[in-house]
Image (cartoon, rainbow, N blue to C red; front, top):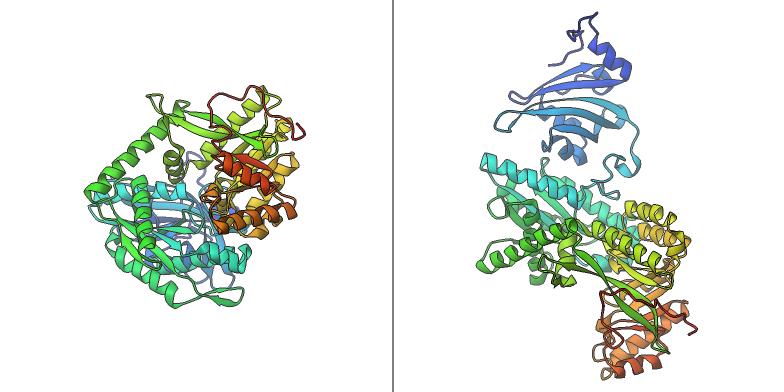
Length: 556
């Protein structure tokens, strides 16, 4: 059924012609009765559907672009403000911006949906500005925090209908080696190819998100949760049996998958992500290219209860100023005197006792709050720099934060009003940032250097960051991971590796810092390698008191 005749709006003055109003605005409207699956269209629908408009959801399904069907049929919000693509028989793909609303009955079941469609130009990167906080710019998939919100709503829907939903996490095996072998630009093409392949494999009602650098999340709303294992095995088989085409060449990759059922096992969006990622970790430990479903056990129940308690403590710490900075000196190798200090974040509970960073930082990242913590730490560092003109501080930025375009813009605005302080900052980024998005990381590094800040690559040697990134990014400092110093006094191979890294950095004009120096013997050996700086318990533990005297110059 469709409508193109005049409709009275029931106003007190002369009735308006709804079709003419819509045509004048270049819009098309619809009213969808979900109880009998009937679509009624208003306005000049011929611009979108030359023959006839879709009259039910099945016909509309075939009109929508395959990669965008989940956007329209998600049914997880009653306020519609979204963009998607439709297939036009003559003009190819058209981009549509929709505004509208959904209606539910007293049992919160959707009964009606209506909206207005407008043809728009293709958004940059395939994602509109209004969607940018929720969509990954590279793939167009939902971001982690958006997926967590969708998970929460899907769980509530599953509880109401008493049917099963599910959540999968799909991880590209050995993605760091893929980046190393073919380059990061081609690596981006791999991520895009994987997202497109997944969107073709998963059911039309499923939602797809990019929840990590090389990890995707798939939400199966009720009642699709019972297909969890079958879909996981299908995903694994599809990637194993058919290569991606990258730069016109076949590339064989495999994936590992973890999953959890909702709400029978995971009862919140946060639980769903934690449990599925635990299952993924087990799948990767068992061997790549495999699937494991999360199943409760007494040990896991206790472990997860502790994790959820930690999550609540983190939320409270953000509200109650529960984060403080501790400062650890980084000294000149030749003199042992502090050149600058690293600011390390500490979290305190109601009992005023510190919580170890290795516990709360991974949880903050899982909660999607890494950027919030980084903003807080940055503001505390700027405060301390302003209060102590002789202080030089190194501050660490999480990998996912450094690779986000909005973070770069935020820091640019922040430093614009504190430009004199930037010259006394060393911003440390991890290799995760480089591997997630080398292009955005380059933009972040260039912006920092414009303000006079130095940039360091943290924990070098802990992963598989390419040497060429040191040169491409224009880094000032390379911090050698403390694990490389284990047994360095007795292990000839370790000695050779550390010496080669220091010499390599020197050849590139990059200063070096050895982390984790705990004895005078290790410090003496490092001085023989001509290391520039050292950091570790031998020179000073992190202290909550701000350094009173700042740091000496390198000539001291």
